[in-house]
Amino acid sequence: MKTYFIGCTSVLEEDGFLVPSRLTEAQMKAVSRREAYLKCAGCTAGTGIGAVTAATQVSFSYSITNRVRPNAYVDILIDGVLQAAENLTEDSGVATLLLPGTGERTVQLMFPHLARLRVKDVQWNAPVRPIPKKEQFWLFFGDSITQGMHSAHPAITYPRLAATYAGCDYINMGICGGKFSAEDIDRVDREPDIITVAFGTNDWRQAEDKESFRQSVEAYLVRLTEVFSCRHIFGILPTWRNDADAVYGGMTFTEMREIIRKEYEKYSFIRVLDGMRLVPPLEDFYGDHQPAVHLNESGFLHFAAALVREKEIQNVLNI
Image (cartoon, rainbow, N blue to C red; front, side, top):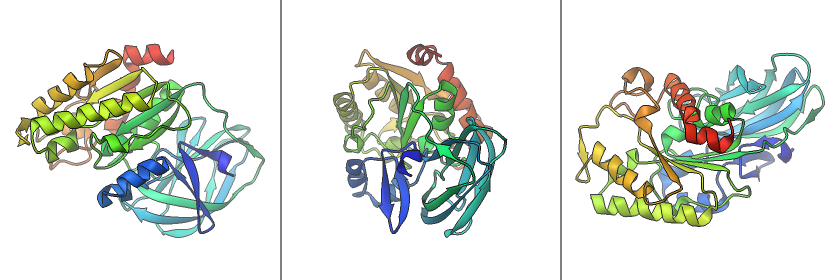
C-alpha cells in the first residue's frame, strides 16, 4: 500500500492508519520546537494516493487528526486534471469516492493541504498499479502561500499546478508561518532537479532589524546549497501585499525584498524571480484583505502558469 502514496518523504503508521509525511523526521523535529509550525507542518499538503487503474470507485476509512481550516477536501484528479472532490466534514468515517471516466487512466486522490488525513482499508473496484516516477523532481520550499493557504482545494496550489504543467514529480515543503530558517532544511531520498524557495513575508512582519534578517537569509542559503547538489535553484521574491507601506524591523517591504535579492545574487546558480510579476497586485487574486497576503484559487492559477512560463525554468525542465 505504501508504494501508492505520492508527494511524501515517508509514510507513517499510526493506530492502524497510514499517513504520508511531506517532511523528513529531522524536519519535523526542527519544527516541533515551534508549536504554531507543527500543526501546519503535519498537514498532508501535496500528498495523496495515486494509481493507474480502470476503477470507477475507491473507498477508505479515514481519520483527520488536525485541521488548520474547516474544509478538508480530497480532490480527484484524472490524468492530472481536477474532475471531482469530496469534503470530509467529519473527523472520521468511511469515504466512498466515484472516479470519473472509463478505461485505464491515472487517478490521483490529493489529500487536504490544510488538514492531516490518515487512511486505511483502501479498496478499489478494479486492479491498480503504482504511477511510474516522472523523469524530473521539483522541490518547493516556502511559507503558507506555498502550502496553499486560502485555496479550498489541494489540487489548486501553485506547487501542484506548476509541477503538473511541467510534467514533474514534486514535494510541497511549504509551511504556514515559514521563514528563512536553516534548521528546517534536510535532504530527501531523491535529489531534486529544480528547487524553488519562497520566503520573506513572515520574516518581514517578525524581523528585529535588517542585519539579523539578512543573516537569516544568508544562513538559509548556505545550508540549502550544502545539503543539495542541485544547481537549478530559483529564489522567488515575496508577492504583493496591500500593507506594503508599513515598516517592520526597520524595513519597508521593498527594502526587505532587496535584501533577499542581494543574498540570492551572491550565488551564480540561483536565479531570482519576482513574485510581483507572477501574480497581479490586485485584491481580486487574494483570499484575505486585511492585509491581502494569501492567494485565492485564481491567484494560484496565475502564479503557477507564470512560473512555468519563465524561460530559465523551461530550459531546466525541457518544456
